[in-house]
Length: 97
Image 1 (cartoon, one colour):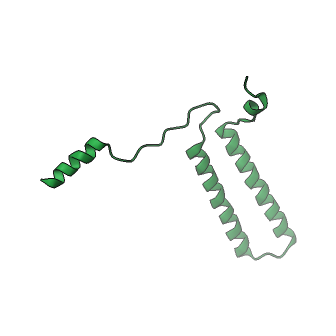
Image 2: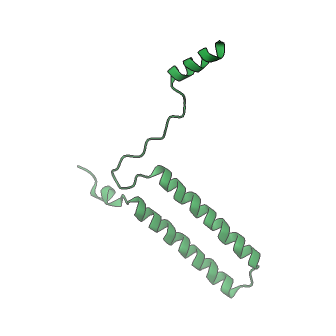
Image 3: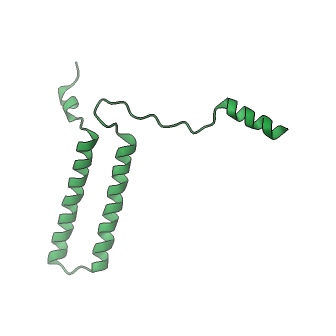
């Protein structure tokens, strides 16, 4: 019998994206609050927020690459970029002639 708590803990890719975006929004609000009450260099704020955006983009790309669209859905198969042995053999025979 499956663990009900474990089954309920699985979320969709859409829900995961929403959580990630919510997290980064809260971080931006924290930074904005600190900047509002402290004298912080404008360039530092821009650089910090740009870096946060880069991190957010990386996390979302990893989610897209690794997570199935819906819970229980099979993960997409990564393509095998290694050439088939028949292709390799044919290419070798071409080079030998």
